[in-house]
Image (cartoon, rainbow, N blue to C red; front, side, top):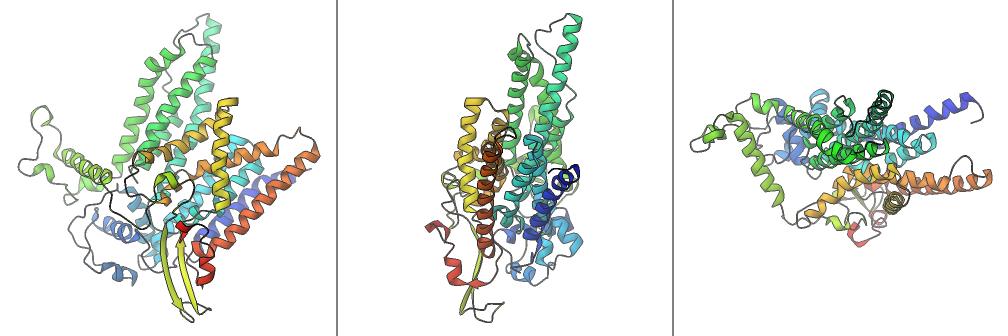
Amino acid sequence: MSTPARRRLWAWGGPAVVIVIAALTRLVDLANPAYLVFDEDYYVKDAWSLWNLGYSSTWPTGADASVESGDLGGYSDTAEFVVHPPLGKWIIGVGMRFFGPESPASWRITTAVIGILAVILLMVIARLLFRSTLLTTLAGMLFAIDGNAIVMSRVALLDNSVMFFALLGFLFVLLDRGWSETRLERWRASREKLGRPGDWGPALWWRPWLVAAAVAFGLCSAVKWSGLYFLAGFAIYTLVIDALARRRAGVPHWFAGTVIKQAPVSFLLTVPVALAAHLSTWTSWFLGENGYLRQWATQDGHAWTGIFSGVPASVQSWLHYQQITYQFHVTLTKPNDEQANPLGWLLLLNPTSLYSAEMNRGTDGCLADTCGTYISGVPNPLIWWAAVLAIVYLAYRLLRHRDWRAGLILAGFAFGYLPWLLYLDRTVFQFYTIAFEPYLLLALTLTIGRVLGSRNDPRSRRQERLRITLVFLALAVLISVYFYPVWTALPVPIEFVRAHWWLSGWQ
């Protein structure tokens, strides 16, 4: 890094290499397996009928085989009860619409692209947080090679989109933090110049990044309802940050000013905007006539009466739809062999096996007596467990050093993980963790940054710590290479597959 040219090459070349790795791990052989994997049998069919009818419809018995053979014309005109909002299916449908629905790669291409974009987004956030090309590249690399991130980018499920929009909202919250603090300082300086202290502080209306965050979190909730936790959590987080910023600026009644002046403004800048973003994804349902429960309020005895009788029938029908969807989610306790209690998510006690098949020699490229093709949702264990330990370190760092970066990263992790502890009896899966994995990796990156130290440290000490970091990264890469076949359904000897079952729950 001794010349400006080398520094520029490193600043752009390091992240560029990471993007290439992310693209290769997510796009190569994306059509394998040529079968509907796990809940793809819901989302692929829902996406295609949604694109063609404006709502998701029912399919006949045995439709999975037809879809896998390239025939997607079997959907009916009868609306289907779909338990997730439509945006995730719209996203899956984009690839099917533009690349032809016959290929499994078209089912998965948009999810894969979102996975690549998420790696880029994480590096942008890391750059803003750490101001280091090394840590920026490291954060992206960890995300690019992790198994949970790779698997969830190679299957047409919804959770990768939840992760992406939540991470986009996280970026906007980070940008709003600096934006609002700068304007608060300008307000303070102007007050001092005028000799008017301003006991309560200002109400900041012009916060474009906060509005952008509301849009992102609204779209996140339009993929899955769990996105609402990110919206609610970060809405509270921004108020806490506002209050602390006012106190640092010397506002006498900083707490009252936040609650009475800024909180109502922030509410208007976030909640209605997020609701509008969410509702926009339901446009075809509102404009059409045949969506599920679309005519509910027009049927005898269903329409609201009294002071609410003037609410449009379409809105009444939509709210009823949301009510029964909520009831479905909170009562979903159907046993599943792959379900994983959230208490065990951080320990990787029961990763999800999304696909498995065995074959004999000569079948589908099998070169052994018996081969297995698996898609196991187990993350890279070295990266994952190190990241969990890093979360503990960040909690210490927040309490001991008041590190705002630790607080922000912990907030993202908490809003993605802790709400699931309210539903310990519900049927949930390990791969839901993709929603908060970026914050685990940011925590690990911050921790590695502390290990590396600063440029002012003795050269020998810094080089030694850099070597330790490189050894860690090399081991992580080797483990990812080792697990890659069971993340991507490559045919490998069954003994090799079983060698990946490090814990009993990984089988």
